[in-house]
Image (cartoon, rainbow, N blue to C red; front, side, top):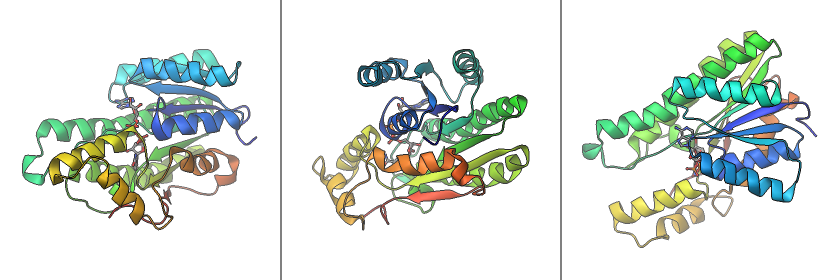
Amino acid sequence: MKLEQRTAVVTGGARGIGLAIVKGYLREGACVAIADIDIDAAEQAVVEIRAEVDEAPVMAVRLDVADADSRQAMISAVEARFGGIDILVNNAAVFDMAPILEVSETSYDRQFGINVKGTFFTLQAVAAHMVARGQGGKIINMASQAGRRGEPLVSMYCASKAAVISLTQSCGLDLIKQGINVNGIAPGVVDTPMWDEVDALFARYEGRPPGEKKRLVGEAVPYGRMGRPEDHVGAAVFLASADSDYVVAQTLNVDGGNWMS
Ligand code: NAD
């Protein structure tokens, strides 16, 4: 077990990639907090995990990554339950889809407010907690292949994820001096509830039948299929464990070789 005696917080951990990482970290011996704005889904995930492993050291805590009071309350709740935070998976994000001429300021503010501001200030708050504890830490920011290139219809999501890759570089180089190791993961196309929303929006904007875009992007991945949430667990365990101590400020592609048709 690579994460024994460690406590991890997974933001947006109630479903999708985050939930797969929660389960993977529990298998590696960590205590895990599912920190999600959807507290009902987070609590339901805890119930389902406990149905499989009775004494699983997992908790649900409400977190809006974009809200300062919520971030501090989350840290206090995890500290009270597990003693402190060693690992943060900064995974929560949202996306909108619109042609450039229809992107609204509301949509811009929502995506940058959660994906960039939320990611940065959650990192900052947890890093401050880690520095105060004096035991170092590991932070993993969830980026995207969308942050490595532009894409039609999702310009603001792409820009927000490019910012996450940039933040990972800057924060990684800065915080390693205080024993906090910041890296990132850049998935490609992953079969989660988020991609169900993507497919529905492609159906609307490109006049495609439901499910067609999802099928096409899956076929275009060199590996031969879309990613699954579980495909990201190995990288997330590696970046949270001592195995990655000398890996600093990197964003690792976990994308089957490609991402979009
Ligand atoms: P998802 O939409 O299935 O799950 C996201 C979770 O984040 C949900 O549980 C949601 O309640 C939570 N959340 C949303 N806003 C929040 C907030 N303000 N505070 C706290 N929690 C909040 O997403 P997913 O597909 O599992 O994606 C997870 C991460 O991976 C995201 O950062 C996403 O951008 C990234 N990613 C996803 C894909 C993909 O194809 N699905 C590809 C590349 C990168």
